Length: 340
Image (cartoon, rainbow, N blue to C red):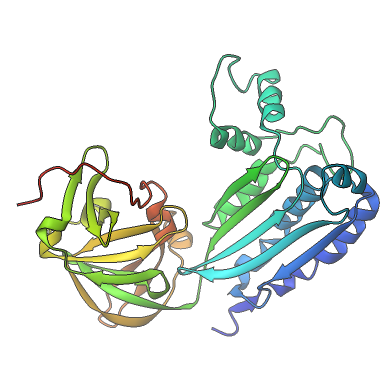
């Protein structure tokens, strides 16, 4: 395993020189902050990270960070900051690249997309939908072609390369304050501390790092909410319940939450989420195998492992499971009658 994995430092170490050269070329003052360079990942993934990270860094310096005079006029320090970090989270490696530049001018992006006929003139798009436009093939807001921008290689190539590794890329941006790209990639081969849970005749692995607590809920604490399914009332908060048997189509599982176990996990965007399982089998260290390389990408699954009895157990991707679930709320919800 030590041979298969290596730190991302081998890729991150190339970035300071790139920042120095581009800063001098663009006439900008940029400081690069690197964290988590000792985070280890499978070497096959490391080798494929260089091109996407290089493009994202070029994009941050050219489109994101302003010139020193423009930053001073906007009340910012003359020196811009780009942060590149890596960490292991819930059985995956998460790489973040953020800057404190101008952020995405969504009005300009939308206008450019309409000029090229990518969006209908009367279409009303949300901020998230406008952000997705930058991932369209060869989309660019650069007015002129240079050695840095407008080269015909856009963010669609970055997304395609990340997806080829079984990962995903998300974008957060605030105009005038900066942008943040988050790359979530699978650990092709690593040891993971996980909780083995049973759902019907199947076994699943929940990363220990994502678990907050587990409990057997009372009937009166489970409520049906129109449009949201069942929620669990727990210490003043309403936590969405996700039945794993329904999510993965497992027959013969416990369908009544009060007769099974709810594992409360923490997700990146949806807050806390309750996973409905039949029972807890026990804690175990497992070797993560890539399911993308051997089968294909599956939503909510971050990998697989082989248990001691020879069975294959899927490792749950907690951020992926929580992506389509409404967030935890402490607001008053009008519940339907409790489950009988």
